[in-house]
Image 1 (cartoon, one colour):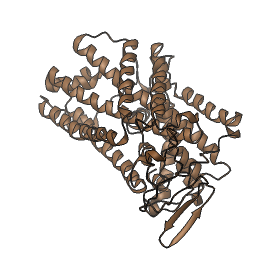
Image 2: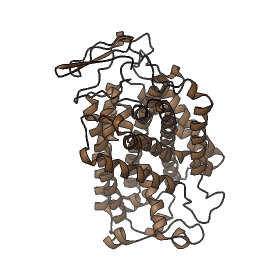
Image 3: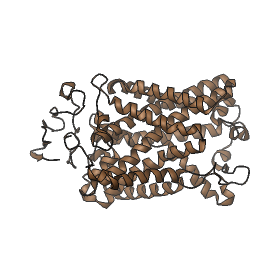
Image 4: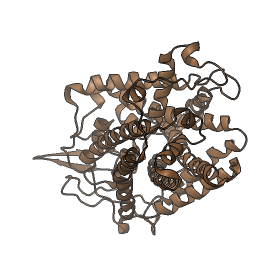
Length: 482
């Protein structure tokens, strides 16, 4: 994905990659399907993160001071969290980056300090045989789990799903790359460094918490196991402070999930996938305020099933992970199926490109199947895995809408948008293009009538005929009608 991002740095992300990599006659179809899986997945991820935070707040309050938790109250907390995210996302990107720096500090220095504090204050520590050797099957409800009914390998496979959900959103760097300088170089590095840091720090947190467990049975039966570990080690007051730190980290995660979501919607509206009225940059806030509000509203609506059934809510949010992974897999598979359409950018994998792509596609296929398997035994109406149902609904809409009406008008890109509608220009590591100045906007429509000259990228002034002149060394090539 980093290699594709370097070649096609646009805020559309996977759906635009699919459009650029597919054969010309099939490009709109693949862009439409990829776009809707990515869009629904993005909304569900924001819902999952923010509802998880709301649940953390509710459960912490109920454990510490007897607060009576209900689905309605948790939904109210979710609404407050989403409103706070909308308020912050109204700032311009330059101000929003300050929140990014705050998030980096919290998720690195803050989390490292948390783990070190817990390890230092814990009265006893579990042995390495417990941390690395103990196997516990928690998939059984009032009886044996899947390790007995099936095998321990099945339970281990189900356990992988949590890490797949946690380390997600690889496309966030793509959705913000049009607001990033030198995106063809920096966006892929940002994608890889974020995943590496998340994996490393996440593993450190898990190991630290496991070593600090005082009573395993108490922790696993607790309504909030992480709070039990923190309070056992640091006392009630210290544990509550550390819990607030975790909540702040999750709040920032939800904030930037909505930011990424809004930019994807902005691009999809620009290219006609959703109503074009959402493709508007507000002249005052200098951000796509309509997609910010639309994304937050959709995330709240997706959480409403929790009022009737927690099982139904889990089914709707399960599409978060599987929907995004499918949208990632389609453009990756395109690089293998249609290699001639893939002109690599400055970030290249060289000879490892195809093997990595094959492994990525195989892994996505495996986790897609595993996500649809039951994780609790016995399987009842309350423990059934509704992921296949949610996946079927999204797939039915994506494919059905295409064949019923979208194929008649959806072209995969905006014909008048000359800034990003460029099929595989062979950039030599330059920045794609600078953002338009406010006086270049057509009112508040956010669609530049022309683009400023950028000497660093070699891109010259563009007119309404979508002609782009690219200066590649001593050679000048012109691209018309793109």
